Image 1 (tube, rainbow, N blue to C red):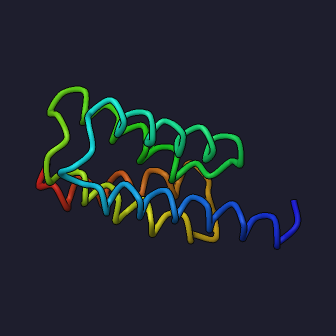
Image 2: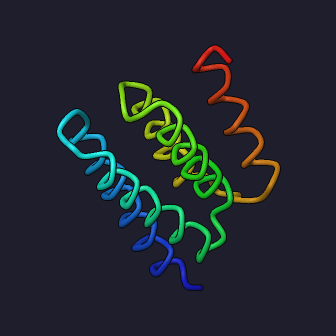
Length: 105
């Protein structure tokens, strides 16, 4: 994939993440899940493992806990992961660990 195409994909993901962040507290659980699933699928399609992993974790967290303020921690890390140069399993694990630290788990 060309560098320009990847920049467009990253820009789209950031736009989607920022859109969710901006609508926190006003978005329905169903709409949130749909939007996060779209991000997860796009990340998987473009082999962005770290972003996909965080989106999957966010989907699970919302299923168990609803969509409270915890979402912003996930979205912040997802935004960072979009810009990560490498997107392999090790990077995915590092972002998962960062999330655990951030949430105090």
